[in-house]
Amino acid sequence: MKHILLFFSFISLTTGLIAQVVPVSVVQDTDGNWGFIRDNKPYYVQGVGGHVHMNVAKEIGANSIRTWGVENALSILDEANANGLTVMMGLWVQHERHGFDYNDPVKVKNQLESFKKVILSLKDHPALLCWGVGNEVDLFYTNTKVWSAIEDIAKFIHEVDPNHPTCTVTAGLDEKEVKLVKQLAPSIDLYCVNTYGDIAGVRKNIKEFGWNGPYMITEWGPNGHWEVAKTKWNTPVEQSSCEKAASYEERYKNEILADKSHCIGSYVFLWGQKQETTSTWYGVFSKSGLRSEAVDVLHEFWNPTTLKNRAPQIQKATIEGLSKGEFIILNPGNKYSASAQVWDVDGDKLKAKWMIVPESTDIKSGGDAEAEPVPVPRCVRKQGVESLEFYAPDLEGAYRLFYEVTDGNKHYAYFNIPFYVMPSSNAVSNGRFVSFKKQQFNP
Image (cartoon, rainbow, N blue to C red; front, side):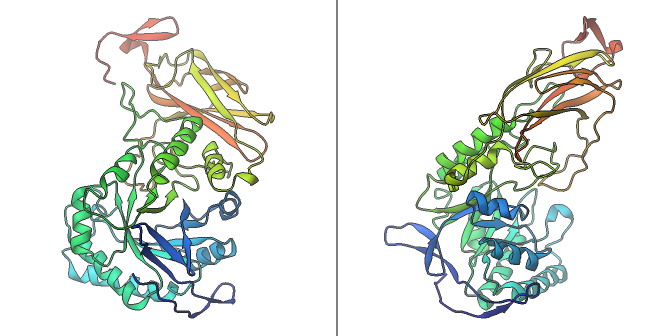
């Protein structure tokens, strides 16, 4: 999209302040390198996915946030602007997997008309960076007409808003979707990918798949729950906060920053906290807003001079000497011990919390809302920063031992260890542990 210097007055409905639209475009220089131009200056996106803790985003050196929909859009844009942040404004294009029928022209037209109103109301806000037209509409879909619907939205944006580029986001990178976007949605200016353990495949394959323009990584972070080792009872084994921090560092440095010609920025996931498989899998904050080590990693990349205190680090954690992912089978009601090795570089006084939580049974796909399981009461008996005595739950099933340690300076670290409670009727007792009558474990 051409860089057009047009300025319009914008009146904020929440602040009453008059501001000017800040023009944004994507351009390619004479050396073939792509980038954003914002307000006539190069702009590389150091972004966070989510609209909470904007003051922290500003503090650590982020310059942009991402939304997935337009709920409270104006207040989010205003707050971002007050913090010197831009917004990738998500337009939540409906998903086939949620029941939307792209063979129904009335529904498709109504969706377009609703977006037209939103686009016209927000297009001149000074914090707007670009439009995210659809997020992972390709997840478990069959009807490729969705790309034509995305084209209609993106085309309208170009007709009424010459100041902001359009993008669409796919779940991972697949050659089929790249070709469909190019063919059916030519008004899309840049390609965006949500990717986790397979992030290296984006830089390696995107041009080979046919996309020669700019792109962004719009969700990235730890290994996804579908990409990790499983226990014998088929529950995914989660990385600790320390292991995740190492993943964030390696992926940002070696994959995102490594493509200087076509990758024009990224949005880390998730800038906040949510229940998805577990309560800690994707968020870089705790429920109460404490920062994990992943935030320190971003801080180090983006604004290291203001990094004064760091999160604790966990070196090792076990149940009766067994690490996560090992075959940990406990007798119901028996007493066990767990341990953690924790280190804080600042020498802060640490405080720990241990919980026994049933394995989640409300597993959804694509980040859909999940219910968080309730911790089992009266299991934890004697807890300290590096040790725990607990009783296994009475009911058979899969559980996790959760551990969180805080430093009193708005930081925390965590891990969880999956285990299974098996009644003696299904197993042969071996001290406090059990061994199975059948070689194949199949609860």
